[in-house]
View 1 (cartoon, rainbow, N blue to C red):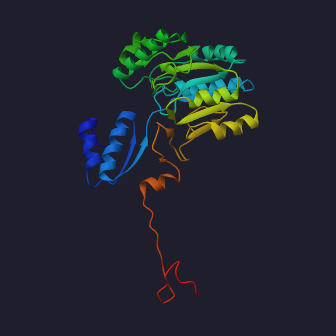
View 2: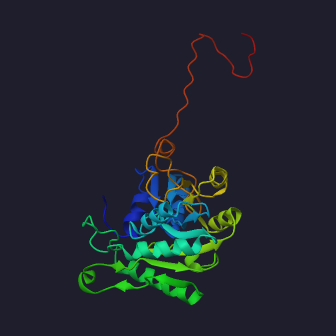
View 3: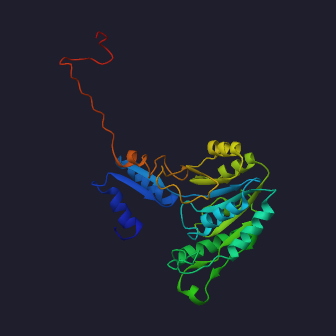
Length: 294
């Protein structure tokens, strides 16, 4: 592990002649800069960048299971996980009931020191992240989204010793709002209502990122439609957007990555080189694709 700031340590690592492969996880801005440097140096680079991951809840979904999946995906790591859920796309028929259950679940969450096994939501990484989250919440309010719960920094008592943000849910969010399109990287969820699976898929795919998505439904036809049409590198069925991908090819589409995968067997293509071997045991010259005699 090498400590230091990005411009100093990062540039040194990327440009060093002994470094042959770069695997980067972070922001799109920095990822693009690294990719440009690697392009000039002809180095292989694998990028895993931003995400705006969504859970789709259809009108036939098991709502208890959906709520559990959303709560864990959105708040289990304080939203500071690349696959964390930050959007909920729900069928209008079950929107009100889903919101009621989510509110109950959020109010029951224990917030505090992540080393305490009874705590469900820990702190975010630092004050800068805390302020960024709060700015986006203010933006959401200004854009006209309805704040259902949360929306504030926790400062009192033991919370003063860390960087805690109250789990936050917006509703009546539209796909063009910034809180529905930009990566916040905190415990903030935007709920959007749709009338059909087609609309849900379109809303899911409307963002610049394509890391993880999930669908809750009992309809196998809807499941296979989602598996085919959701434009993300990972699709979960009746599970949240986090947690099951470590043994599989991991990465995203569009602005999330550059086509490589960092886990599973696909990672071998990133961190190794193919070598093709030809062995001729005939004892005579054979001109491939020219000589036709046996």
